[in-house]
Amino acid sequence: MKITVSQLRKIIAEEVKRATLNEMPVGKDAEQALMMLRDETVGSKPIVTIYPDNTGSDVDEVELEKSALPKVEIDANRCIFNEPKSKMNQAASKIKIKSIKNAIEMGDELPPIVVTPRGNEYLIVDGHHRYTAYKQLKKDKIPAIIVPPERVIYSDAYWQE
Image (cartoon, rainbow, N blue to C red; front, top):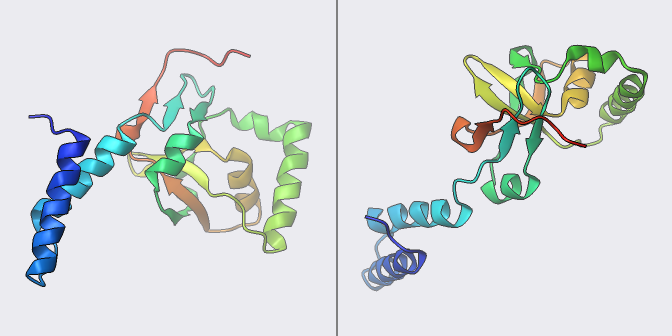
């Protein structure tokens, strides 16, 4: 049975009213309705699209922000690339990595990398240069946002510029 957003809001309002009148905590019905409302409003739109053959990925920044996924510290040794590692050896990448390393050493807060679980590892979907900079500085932990697999799609399409 599909419940509309307005029905969910009504369930929540009724439960909050009942809890307030009885001076009791909000019950499981409201908690469940809140979770369903969150899922309904945020939707299950993909946050990440991953392209084949290590050609990269796209992150939907709007969906990522709406998801409110927390920033966490992950083990740098459990991360794997989703782009050719050789890209990090290109002149432009080396300059970018050096700049990022300087920012890290100065204590600047950088955006977290974006990863998704793949077995016991994390597939980097955004932040390869930041990851490389942290690794070159021998950091064990890296700030990251972990996108759940159900918010990731795999595409046969390639980037078109």
